[in-house]
Length: 359
Ligand code: ATP
Image (cartoon, rainbow, N blue to C red; front, side):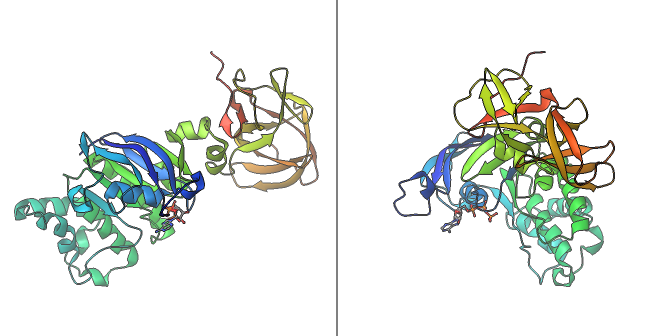
């Protein structure tokens, strides 16, 4: 196992890149601690697979270095990096039994049979495959095949890192939830560094202790699920995480205060930068509809989804989403809104621009 450090990584698929947009990865500096559970989260095309392939050695970066502890592995081929990888689609031998599939990575490295047997049975129990160990893999469902694929990634305990690239794509929605929690449990048991690549926030937030959020070839925030939810460093993170995502509302800044539709909006703390495009960020969970509100709006849509309702309110041409567990207004109702100041932030040019007030 090892700490993995990425230093000044840039990658372009073009032969002579010039402008920033020529790079699939713009500038990545990152350290993955030994034994951590990480997710790499971002929309399609943001560079997740490029980064993963650079770590595994399938791709050589245009610039920068990759270090496993103090060893520079940038120029080493994949088989010398001691990595396990689980892909989107099952990579297994159909003609072999489940047992032999799981044993393969160990036998391949000359591990003795007693140890192979112990480890295969341990992993099979963890993945609930123990009843099908003698079954030929070709007879299994795609779900079970992917479980074997995951098992093959997990079976060795001497790898530097296990990387999962959207591993639940082929899994039935009901089983997805189960496998997600299973993987988290497995990480706690075997404590190998794991990097889980996904565009699905639920998968990232349930699996990882630290989530690395990427946009357009760059890392916009690294944080715990709670940090990403509570205090997004960038409007992209606010909008991408949460359902519905954070409200990002264009605002004016004057006399060191933020103004939205003529109302002074109390913020979490002092404004540290006001140059550039200014926006207020507040999650729907912290938008309050009551008579103490200053911001007048009209309800466009209200959806009662059981434990709470999601209400879309138009303030002029700007839509504000609110989550409420109080009375649900109807379409066309006039309402007044206010925001919980502790959870209301200012962003300039997308980046957080308020400081938290000291308690
Ligand atoms: P997805 O979830 O869709 O796989 P991703 O976040 O993994 O997306 P990448 O596949 O790393 O993103 O792609 C990042 C950028 O690099 C995209 O603009 C993509 O079009 C480009 N790209 C990826 N692979 C190649 C390639 N082999 N040749 C040229 N451009 C590529």
